[in-house]
Picture 1 (cartoon, rainbow, N blue to C red):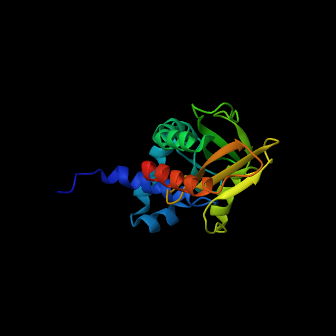
Picture 2: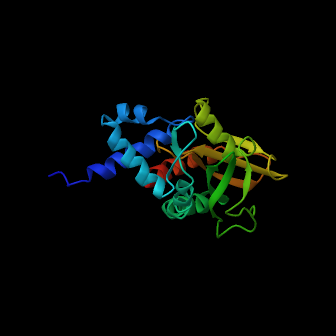
Picture 3: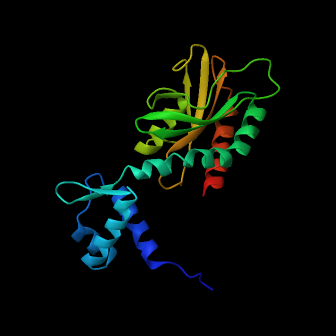
Length: 213
């Protein structure tokens, strides 16, 4: 039996999704056509969403996603971190290297979860909250490769010395999660990443993606 749902809430969420998928905003008429409802309904939906700062309208009347969405977005990181920790712990202990989950934050890569191995004598210090350019380091490069459709088998990216002298990294992108760009990786003090690490990182990224679906 199908659960009873709210038609108005469903339409409001569809409005947000439509606006999130465009860089130029949408007019009331465009929203009306895409939703299959009359303009009066769209005006009411937009007015309600504007009250919560989830939608704004520019001088030309085009509706865009509002800054209120950012406040909601800030609460996503703790949820994502919690879901990813089991896979990261397993990865760190298995490889003996610092494991991390990195997400896109604007134009940067942001480490939102980090797990260090418990049994090694030394490992790379890498902290949650660390930021770097997307085109530097394995974590960011893996994300860019997935975004550009240039990621090929074996499905992971390797780097050396790009973020820290003497450190090598391996990362694989999160795949199949709508609205979330990220990667799972490890960083280690080594001249090269051992052969078994790349496939293990791909497996961990798949585990995290499954946990987030």
